[in-house]
Length: 270
Image (tube, rainbow, N blue to C red; front, side, top):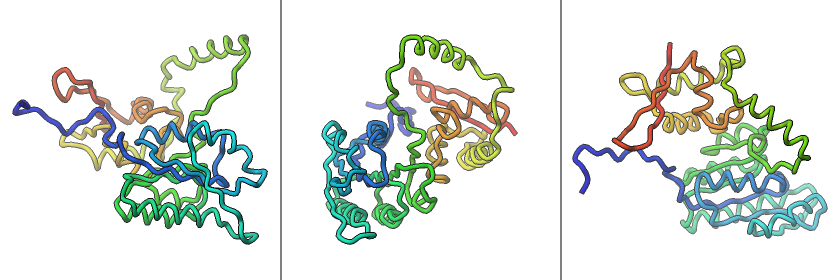
């Protein structure tokens, strides 16, 4: 039996970790070398129950995909170009997406492409009440980014690095230790646009004391700006970004329930 004053609204595991996600990849506008990083990113939001990639794999420019499809259990959907200059691949992906949508088996879609032609598709899926994640280059047109619930730029995904010689590894270990030292205030490059965005989000999400729960703050920032990503600004997590701007934000760590992990709250200093 639960205790009378026990609170249940705070969850320490992602609420959407069991989302069933359909991952649809536009082979013409995605990079094979990033597929492991892309699937790892999708794994943060749920389970990729369908993984399909669309393209004309008879063309030499898509040869790089052939080596990674089996390893990652991605189903190739061969689509020939019927007419020169017309992109039949986009049409095939859109038709399949709508077929999958109407099965009612999915909680979310992940569209891997930098092509703005999928803007209407993303908007249509969201109209049905499903979450849409977009993954593509940072130069992806803004309309497609805005049509997604969250857009992740591939430039900020962690990729597998090639094996380095022992001498180079040792030298990099030394430099890594140096970079792990706490940053001095003089080392932090203040980016006014981030301070303004985070400050306004805190104002909207704060309680009576002016504090906002950082996990909810992150969700709200994504709603304001679907392509918001702390990695763009050199920080792995939002909490690291906040800690780098201590001149502007105040941090408080609290236990919601006795013995539970502490959670971070943040407040504007001004």
